View 1 (spheres, rainbow, N blue to C red):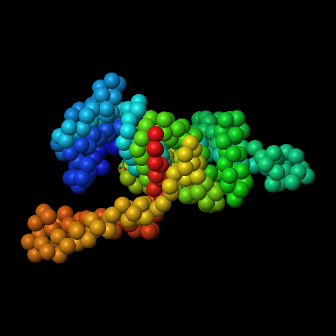
View 2: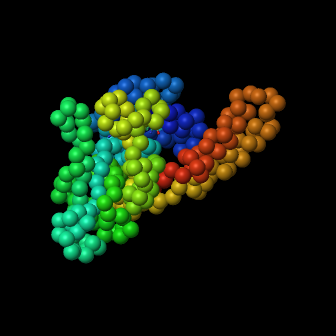
View 3: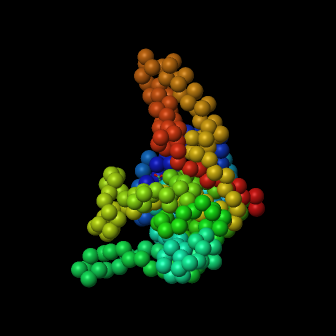
Length: 311
Ligand SMILES: C[S@@+](CC[C@H](N)C(=O)[O-])C[C@H]1O[C@@H](n2cnc3c(N)ncnc32)[C@H](O)[C@@H]1O
C-alpha cells in the first residue's frame, strides 16, 4: 500500500520468489499520476481494478500462472495475504500535540504535577494571520485526541510534558481499517520512527521533516503544497487491536535471510567479475544494496512493525 511508482513490484518480479507463480499483487496507490507509471517495465500487469473486479482478483484461484499485478486506488474490502507499506505512515496527515499539567500551565497553581487527572492536551493548528500569512496557533486538542493521547501517557509514563510530538490519528485509523480487512496473513510496515517519548525529547521538533524535489525542504508553512511534510513515526502509537513485533529493518531482513542472498550475490560476482556480464553486475548490486539496507546509520535503523493475523 502506498506503492508509489511501483518500484517494489518490479523488484519482486525480478527477484522471482518461490511464491511467484501463484502471486497476486495489488499496487494500492491513491495518486493517479503514480498509478500511471505502474504499467512500465512490469510484465504481468493487468490494468486497474476497483470494486467487485478488485475483490474478484484477490479471491481468484491461484492457477500457477502468476505473478499477476493490478493497480488500485483502494485496498480490497477483505483479503488473505500480506499487506506491505513502506514509508506510508510518515506520509499520512498527522497532528502536533503536547501533554500539559494544569499546574505547569498556570491553571491550578499548587497542584502536584504528576497527577494524571491534572493533565490536558494541546495541539498546534494552522491559521491565517492578520498579515495574510499562515501561522501556528496553540489550541486545545479535540476530546477524542485528548483521550487517546492521555491513554498513551499512562502506558508510557516517560513521555515528557510540555514538548511537542506527532500524533498519528489518521495512520492509527488506517491501521484499524487494515486490521479489519486482512482476514489472515501479515501486516508489514517499514518506516523511520522511535518511541513517542524519544521523539518528544528531540529539540526543535527534530522529528518533523520536509522534502522538496527529493531534498530536505524548509519550514513546513513555506509555500503550501510545494513540499512534502512528513514525520518520524511514534511507534508505540500503533499497538492497537493487536501488538506488532518491532525490530529494526536490518534485524528484520537478517531474520528473513538477506545474508544468504548477499553471499549468493558475492559468489556470482567473484566468479564472473572478469566477464562483467549482467549476472555479475546483479550479484554486485545485491551486495551493495544490502549494505545500504542494513546500514545501522541509515536504512538499517528504520523500524519494521509486523502483525501476524491468524483470523
Ligand atoms: C513516501 S511514498 C512511498 C512510496 C513507496 N512505498 C516507496 O517506498 O518508495 C508514499 C506513497 O503513499 C501514497 N499514499 C499516501 N496515502 C495513501 C493512501 N491513503 N492510500 C494509498 N496510497 C497512499 C502516496 O501517494 C505516495 O506514493
